[in-house]
Every structure is written in structure tokens, then in C-alpha cells.
Length: 402
Ligand code: PLP
Image (tube, rainbow, N blue to C red; front, side, top):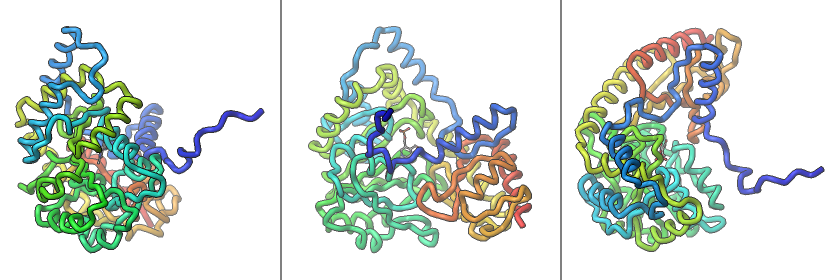
């Protein structure tokens, strides 16, 4: 008997490596093994109390019916204020849209715009999902290499060389997942200069890590740096990382009116809008006190510096100092070709993270999953105790490689 078939469009779309690694950690933990999880890109802080209160009050008040698909007027007004306050961007509320996470915003943008064969430039290493979402929409992801020598940032000349008549989008993500690198205003202005010359290309900036920025580095976003690009930029953000609200599923964007309208059409067909209680919680954090952002950033910075210090003492690893996010992206090229105590040959970064997980029960993610080897991504969104033990185990593992 022939079984019904899964769609061809899924053939090239992979399961996220970080999700797969997190699942492996859960499997090991279920066997009673103490796992140090450094693979998940998720704040370990609780959701702010005022968000929970607002959601509870909304539920008690009967705000439990179908919401407006694009977000309630109150939520979109709060987002409008946020863009003005934090980013100096003046979006009319009709140009603002919400969806079930930044991920769904990006997904809707790609579905709304990509025709078969359209190219999307992805400065790489990059968040795992960009390329898969582009493929899902029928487009062609085009990685633009951003080397460690340039702190994993996009060079204008590489951007210029990658643009073709088929280029539909440039995706930007600074601070970046997986490297934590962020662009200064001058660096962003140089990227914007290139984009001014290529009017057929839209720019999506994923500013999810905007508030996770350290050492007085100043975050910037391209539509503010170069206002002449405002009508070609989709500015994407969310509450997941900034406010420790990953489970609430809420992302938002401001962008060109026609694009936002098309994305809204996609939204009406693939979801009925986001949970009403989440919307109430999002208004509370966007309009509420913002001091927790700085307080948490200070804690993340301590963790970054702690782990950087520990990694610097591990022969064979080399790590750049990122400006933001909560990831480190150490280079492990010197360890390629060695063999672990458990007899595993380390031929790649994937071998490295698998052996580290199997033998010392620390989960990280291979650089290959982000389009650049031989590196691995380590998330420091966890306590100093956990990070200390994780670093001990990584050091022990590396010392055992012969
Ligand atoms: N963009 C980047 C760069 C991310 O790292 C993530 C999550 O890991 C997202 C978007 C998705 O965020 P959300 O939880 O809002 O869907």
C-alpha cells in the first residue's frame, strides 16, 4: 500500500540543531544524568511579575475571545511607543503587526514576498531558522560570509558583491545569534550606503537582542541610521529575549505599508492572531518600567566575562569578545584531528559537540548549524554556578583530547 506523501517543500527544511540538542539533553536528564545545558537560546530569568498580573487581569475580565488578527489597537499603540522611545522610529499603527513570535513575523514576511528563485542574503554565521524559512517560502538563501577576522560582521564590499538582480532581501541580525556581534552606527551606515544603491532589495533587521548589549556599546538599527531606507526596512522585534517571555509567543514589526498589509493577509490564514492574554502581558512590559533590561544586561555581561575568562585558559579554544546577545562562538580548529578519551575522533565541530555531550554531558551547538565551522555556540543565559561547572567539563574534555 502506498502511504500519502509529505510535501516536497519540506525536503530541504531541517529540524533546528539547537532544538535537537536540547531534546538530547532532556533525554539524558531523563536517565538521571546531570546535564549542563548550554545549547538553549533562552533567558533563565522569570517573566516580569507585571506581565503575569496583566495576563491574569485580562483573563478575569473576559478578554478571551478572538483577537484582531494583527494585534489589538492597544498593543499596536504600545509597540508604536516602543519604536519611538527605543529606536527613534515613527511607525504609523497601520504599519505595525504582531504575530506568534519573531519567528512567525519573519515567516510571514518571507511567505508574503518570495517568488520561486528569489534570493535572500544572509550574513553568516546566522540564526539557524533564516535559511530554512527562506527555503520553505521557495526562495534561495545566499550566505554572505562574515569572518572572525572581521568580528563576524558584514563587510560592505562582500554585501555589494553578493547582490544580484534576483536579490529580494537582506537579513540583518545585530547583536547576532550565534556570535553576539553587533554593529556600531558607522558600521551600519556603511551597510546602509550599499543598500541605498540597490533599490530592488528589501532589508529585514531582526533586533531581537537589542537590549542585550554590553560595555556601553550602543545598539543601532538600520532605519534609524539611514532614514532614506525607512520605506524598505522591516524592523522586527519581540518580547522573548528582552523580557524573558519565550513561552508567551509574541513578536512584532514595523515596516512598509504594502508589505505589512501582505503579511497581515498571511497572518489571517495561518493564525487567528496571538493569544489575548499574551497581548495584555506584552502591553504591560512594553509600557512598564524598563530598568530590568539594564539590570539583566549587567548580569549577562558578568556571565559573558566569566565564561570568556574560563575559555581563555583552555588550550585549543579561541573566542572573540562579543558586544551583545547571550552567546559565545569559540573557534575549535586547533582541536580538529584529535581523539577523545572515549575514543571519538574529532573531525569536525559536530564531532566535538557530540563527544562533549556524550562524554561530559554538556550541550552546545555546532557552528555548522549556523553555517560556519569549526566553531561551536555556547549560551551563557544560565547561572554562574552552571556556567562554572560547564566550563570545568569543557576544560576537562579538551584536556583529554589527544
Ligand atoms: N531571531 C533570532 C535571531 C533568534 O535567535 C530567535 C530565537 O532564538 C528568534 C528570532 C525567535 O524569537 P521568538 O521567540 O520571538 O520567535
